Length: 263
Image (cartoon, rainbow, N blue to C red; front, side, top):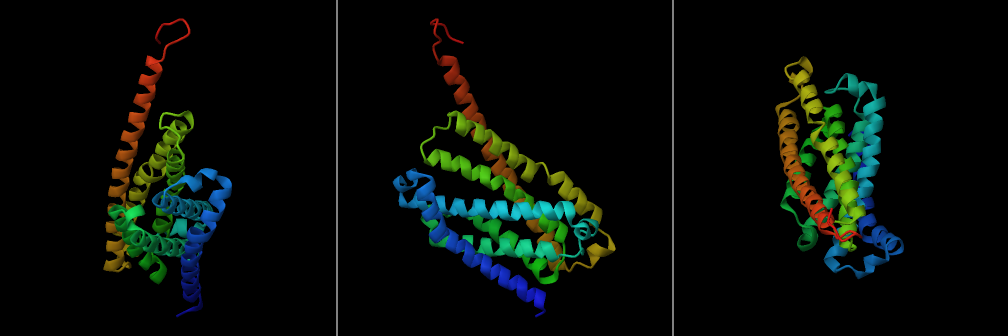
């Protein structure tokens, strides 16, 4: 094993244990001090709270790293299939450690945070990342997919509001809900044309045929699988936002004014 591969393995293992430590130690300690309402949550809610806290930290960390690569890593942007994957592999190694850590927590706390779609999502991503870390291929596409992580903090914040007792029709929760839907659409749905147009541009080139069959399956099938789930989640989020906005409109329309008339 070459020195850089050893470093990537160390980063992945360190990432795994770091996210376990964040879940079991840091999140409970920090949450009590930031939000006293944490103590009033049920055991299942505390498990999900800690899981979402950790996923928020991961999303911000790899998301910022992802943007840096997207804007400043010329080698990856000029050769999306075989460009120098050094920074991408580092970022993907962090995510790999997180995904394995999260899978372990999902299975251990299945009654609290178990979700078959998250298991499929994590396994599909790990399958694709195996080729990125092992053979350094497709760095641009691996990095581009990590843009989706920017939707995680908004999704989690909405859950935090609701579990702490904010009604869905409250202004903070409504504003966060709209922001969540917009961000989710931009980084998971709106970027699809860019992603697949770049994939189409590469398809059939010499660089493409240098990718082994397993790598092509991991690249194409994992992308389609992940985006099908993204569309499903977007549909669910959009329906939820629509219901909340409709409820708020009805409440406003039914609220009596000072002159006794209705809006």
